[in-house]
Structures are given as structure tokens and as C-alpha cells.
Length: 527
Image (cartoon, rainbow, N blue to C red; front, side):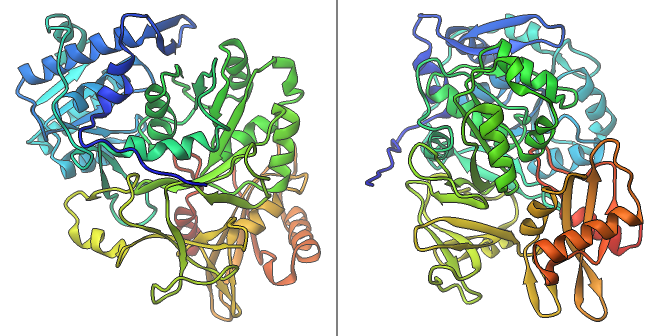
């Protein structure tokens, strides 16, 4: 397979994801399902006019090229418009998660020195409480206005609906996405305008030849995260494919099936946690969905989930892999090659990957080491915002280090082992949690599982399983023993969890990654 990147010398995400489709034809860009149930159809023409108006409003209030503009909004047209308007003027968009508390917002807005913010009433209330900690935050545009804020609609109404994108190049800054690490302060990964084109192959593979006529994309993942923004929203708009936008207060699997069926969703990014919740819904075929492709990433899918997906959706769920700093670099595509349970796929075209040893040397097939990506790469971040030392630590020579343990076989399939800090060292064994978690999910009593290593005087670390039981299942010592025996006798004796805890839910990022660091701290401290 031959592949060549097409990265023009001048590129701007707003032009590529909107302007080129705003040709007066009325082609649909967003299908917005309001909480009331009302449906709003927004064309690329309308999206373009709104983005131009907001860009001009930004400029009128002193925001300019290079300024950071926070976007604290749910899935919907206002969020898309805020991003496009920021890109148009050469500003740097900073997506922020709606569920962030005041301290989380204060850190991110303060760290990047945000000069502007676009938000709604709920976001304004949080930011108002911390405004005195944000001396650089000069302008807030809020849906409906409010104390200390400009009324977003009113400001857009008085602005012109024409604006020419500034001339930006591939490496000009466009976006800061803060990592959701489990230790230390979040780091702002700064991306250039090339990041959108860099994502395209990694979207096209797991969505089985995306785009196709009639495609319509949806994800429950918030657009504040790279999975919602750059795995779904912006690549879809780049290809002229409409996106279904809807804010789910809490993921409801039956509602999700109905939503996909009623609105003709053909492509979906469903994090593993969402898939596990969907799996609990009986007879999914009754909803009459018309899905053509489903991608998932964030946690390894086992054989059981793949088999369930084939039965529930009539297709193979394509697992993919990436991280905020360098996303969508490994993926499956069932239309091109067989999907193997436990494998996150092959290297996506355009990305040069290797498994490195501790000295940074490439390892042969089947050897376990750290997954790395060779620079330069258009999907790769420019740097961490204000953290040159952390940026330097992310690289070894030309290789960007992912911090993830993996191995690659002779046919190019990658298997995820775990984060460097997730790998468990027990009695001389190096144990990846994914294999044990996948196996525990095959037990009829288990709805979700996380496996961590806890300090142990004899073994260095002991394997601990944190379990969410299925509804109606009685938890306690008897079930803990049964699960230990199940792993010991059916998987491997050295992998069985010596400690089993039961919880109502697991801590997760917005895109469904289990926050094992949170669990390690909780149980190491004896909580």
C-alpha cells in the first residue's frame, strides 16, 4: 500500500471543515437534537455565516490571532461555531469539559492564559466564581448573557456574516487539548492546523471506508475531548458528512439505540464503557438501527465484545488507538483485514510506528516494549503548552514515546499491554491488566472490571480486581472467591486477583478510559 500525505502550505481548519462546503447548496452539516426533542437542521451555509459573525464579534472585542479562547459548551451548534470562529481569526481554541469543577477550570484557563471564553449559563456560573483568579480572561460570551458576560446571540446578530480566514500554515497553533492524566497536573497538548488532516486516515479506517453516501456520524463522547472533536466532529465536517449533536446528561443505552435508529445514524464512535452498557439492552435489533460502521477506542475490546457487536449491530466493531498528543495511529478496519480479538489493529497509513526497548532501540516482532511514533507526523502535537521539559521527555530522538506498553506480531498487528504505570510487577511477572479485565468480563456476574497492582511486601505488587457486578448479583466474599477461582483455573494461576473489591461504578475519563491511577491511590491508601 502506498500512501502520501496531502498537507497544503496554507491550511485552516475552519476553511477545510466548513467554508469549502458553504456553496449555497444547503448541504447539511449538523443535525441538532435539543433536550426538548426538537430537531434543528443546520447547513454548512448557515454554519459558515454563524462562524463569520462570531469571528467578527471576537475581533470587535479585542480578541486576535494567537489568543486562547475557551469553549465550555455541550455538543451543539454553538460549540461548533465557537471552534470555527476561533480558527478563522488564527486564535487557539481550548475545549473544556462541562463537568469540570471550578478548580479544574481555573487551572486550564489560567495555564493557557485564556483571553476569551464561550459558554452557557452553567459554565458562566462556575467561571464567575473563579474570575478573580483569571486576570487574563478579558471577554466571556455566554448563551443568554449574564453577569460579567456578553450575550452570545446579541453579539453575533450585530456582527457581519462575512469573514475571510486568516492565512495559517500547517504548524500554526490551532488547538490546546488538556490531557486527562491520572497523576500530576494536566498538560496542554498544542496542535497545529495540520492536525485535522492528520486524523483523516485514522477515521477512515475504523469507519470502514468513511465517507460513503448517506453517512451520518454520532458519538456520545463530549466534543471537549479529542475523541469527540477530532475522531468525529471535525473529520466529518471535512468530508461534508453531517454530525448528529445531542447532549446526553447521562448515558442511557436504550435512548442511545433509539437515537441512532430514529435519526439514521450510520457511523458511530462508541467508547468501550458505552458498548458495555449497550450490551445490557435486550434485543437491540428491535430498534431498527442502520449502522454501517462502529469504532471504539480507549480500552481493549475482547472476543466477547466483538461477538456481541456482530450480533447487535450486524458488523465488526473496529478498535483503534491513540492519545491526545498523537491520536488515531493504530486501527482495525474489517473491510481491509481480519479483526483479531485483543488487537488494537495495524499502523494507520502515514504513521511510522515501532516498539522500543528501554534504550530507545526498535525491538523485533513479538517483543514487548514501549509504542513509539516517528516524527514528523501531521497528527503529532507541536508541544506541551508552557512545559518545555515535559515536551522534551516525550521524545527520544525522532521517536515520540506514548508511555504505553505494546507488542507487534509478524503481520503488523499491535496488542496493547498497558500503560507503563499500569503494568503490574508481581513475583517476577510483568502483568498487563487488559487481559485479566477482558477475561473477567466473560463471567456472568461481572458488568465491568478494572485490574490494578497494589503494594505487596512479598510480591512487590499484588493483582487486585475492582468489580462492578451485574444488576441483581449478590456481592461479597463468596463471589470474590468464585472470581478468583475463575481466573486462576480458566486463565492463569499467576494472573488471579489476590484482592477483589466491589464498587457501584469505576472512575473513567469522558471517553471511557478507566482511571486506574485513581483506583491505585484509593486502595493503596486503604479507602
